[in-house]
Amino acid sequence: MGPPQATEPGSGAEPRLSMLRLSKKADYALMAMKHLAVKTDAAGSSTSAREIAEQYDIPIELMAKVLQRLARSGLLTSHQGTRGGYTLSKPTAAISVADIIQAIDGPLTVTACSTEDEQCEQFTKCNVRDPLWRIKDRILSALATCSLAEISTDEPYIEPAAMPVSLTRSANR
Image 1 (tube, rainbow, N blue to C red):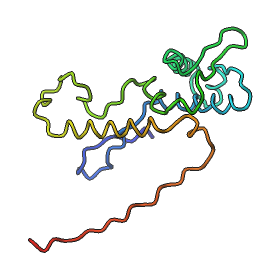
Image 2: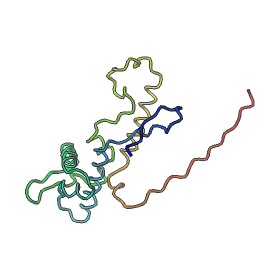
Image 3: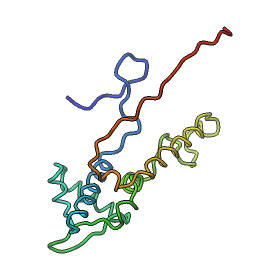
Image 4: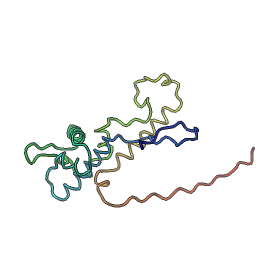
């Protein structure tokens, strides 16, 4: 069975599942950074791409590329030699989830026109462009306020309480 297929809303099929989804490389980067954060707390020695890849059943070549990109962005330090590998270049509280994702995937985008390059035919007429840009900024802000230290804890996720909703019908019909 393959991954879920995206369908059009209102088609009677399952809804789209790819909205605001991280890339696989970003997932792997977050996993690697958490691994390094936990290991740094325990031992402080460098960790090889092979060790991380084997721990999580990720292809070694892909993990090596992810770690190299994180090192180029300044989030990791690469150490050469037989005991070489990677270490965090900053404290876990100083590295945000947004830093990690953007190091791998580049700037966060929500729409095709998420930059001001005006490539879209509807750019000047679009009535949702600015609100969607504000939503993107909120998402980025949320990711920026979540640190590697926060995701490196083993505390279980507790779903926030649902907001009560009350619907009233207007008598002015």
